[in-house]
Length: 471
Image 1 (cartoon, rainbow, N blue to C red):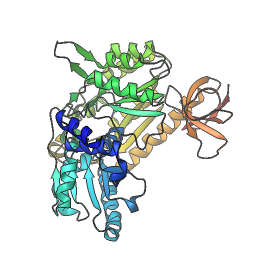
Image 2 (image 1 turned 30 degrees about the vertical axis):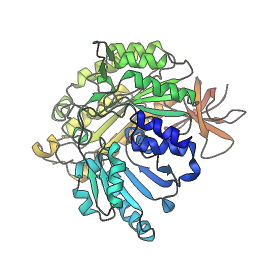
Image 3 (image 1 turned 45 degrees about the vertical axis):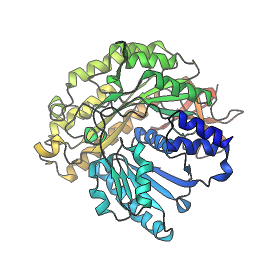
Image 4 (image 1 turned 180 degrees about the horizontal axis):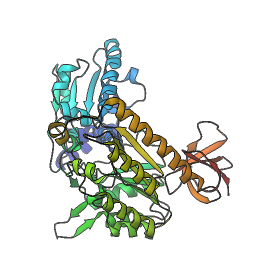
């Protein structure tokens, strides 16, 4: 039976990896699987990419959560801020000790940091055996073979077409409730501070048919929530051979229509592209979550211009006003950078005033750090002193803590439908989950379990959490 199946595989022009996978399916006792440990840093896109990597290597490697026993360790990296890269370099030093005890173990670097530094990182970090950029994951089996032959190996070629849309991810670290689907790759915005277009390449969208297939598979596997991912999902656009175009709003609607029991989220939006069509689609479907992450980065038009964000303060606030009018119960989150090049006290105060005007539910807040090859690195001076960056960031964080608490206090007394994600960290007698607004809710366990939808009445809160009772 094995040889008959092998003949069929060759006749169908399968590749060698597919052959090995088929053999393992029919005769697993003949194959000893190697162990793969993947460590992921950074955004949800990297989480989705790691699941793609696990799928590509699945014919020969099985996932392990024990790095000490791994034959191959892959670090999927983030390069958005310098702090993230320093953490990864420190981690590579720790892995050197493990590698010394395990001759033959390989260590590889994936993702944005790999793409940014290319083969240079192989020279700087002797622990590394291979480097692969975000568009080179299909080449990993070849790179591993080169390392096994005694060579250092790398592939950091960016692609205009790669979307991995034919690869079904291996969701090895998922909670079985919420899953990510990458709907597009790359970015065409070229914000002056951002390295992403240089590390992830130009923007391209996946076929909606493969996205829907992946969402249907999640449903079949018992998942209750899916998050559609892209650097700028609002600019998703796929054109079929017959000229039919699918927009992001249309894609969201098609995913939402798969099942009323499947919650749909998305990340991340760019303010210049969030359309009225999308806002009305979110309002139309109860299972599309009432939560929008809309990064503002700064509150003054002058800084936004230096950042090449392509919108003004007033245009951003108009989008916020439309969201609040059409989706009154929508929670809005944002990203904010403190201490960008040339930032004055007046510009900083404009950010604080915009935060108050919007009343964000929560925010991701950072100090500006220079990234090589960006427009800001070559055209602007990083002239805000570190201590002033820190002071301004602290002011932003303190204000957001206040705004988050006020936002949560307005929810006390309300009842929300909550998707249970697991047991609370503080007590096995309590569960936690998220409501449509992406807020963490903690409540008594009762007879409920992970994956259930429950109604919870909010009785109290902190700035970070809603606390309630079963309703």
